[in-house]
Length: 178
Image (cartoon, rainbow, N blue to C red):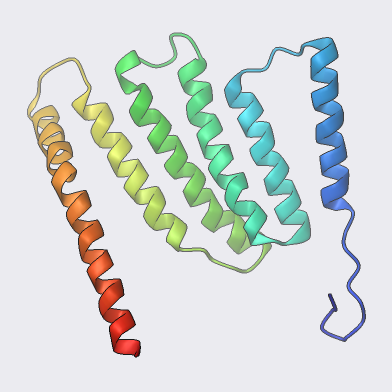
């Protein structure tokens, strides 16, 4: 690999140092038994990717960092006894995962100049779906719960139809390119 001026590019030691620190921590975990929840462990891994991606300015590392960080929030909230009502857990994990996807756009814009706006579409879809699930799973009956349940049932048909339409569109584009 070469820099823009043609001189050889020397890889940064940051990734290697972070991997060594992670390995030392995992070895210590076997000996000392530090009580970690799954949410904290996933969050630490997400932070690892975020640090590496930010320091190296590589957006490809920020993507798993954002996803794992968002997921860790949801897992941590679900694992915390009594923090959330049981019926909200599935929806909260999806909402948290959506936050992680939104984080991809923010982090990649801040550290690499790439915007990765596609992640906002995923974030919005996950947030909306998670919110609908929380509402639909609520124990009390309401017009909002009925509407959310109906919408979720409709998505069982709309989602496959959207995939079929997307596939047809891709095939048409391919044919038009020839």
